[in-house]
Length: 119
Image 1 (cartoon, helix red, strand yellow):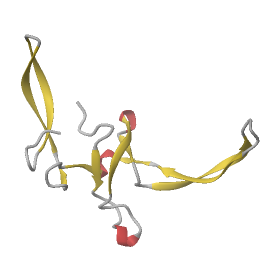
Image 2 (image 1 turned 60 degrees about the vertical axis):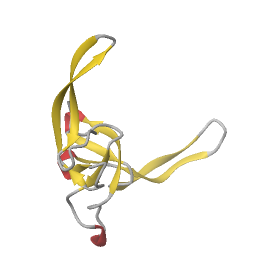
Image 3 (image 1 turned 90 degrees about the vertical axis):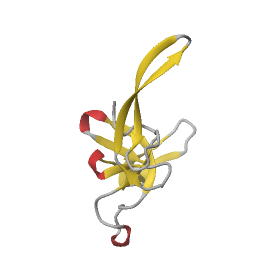
Image 4 (image 1 turned 135 degrees about the vertical axis):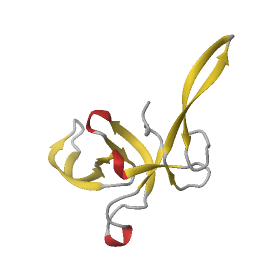
């Protein structure tokens, strides 16, 4: 089970501060997790400019030009945000037994280490 999943609220914990033009301290939702590269794409963080060749759609409108979108950052540079304190926290796992329709199952659950609350 992964520490960070798509849809989680994370905070950037390394890099230049916002006063110096960086992203440290910013919070955002995870858009995409690139497991094989150990990277995540976070909403509103690490914007890059991309030059796209000008083309035309079938209706005749022009596409392309200079676009900005989020680039990936390494998973070690972000930390999950604790739902209780709204501050970055580490992630722990614990096993719980869940009974559903008379079937008992053991399930791994992620929890915030600071507050102990489930994620």
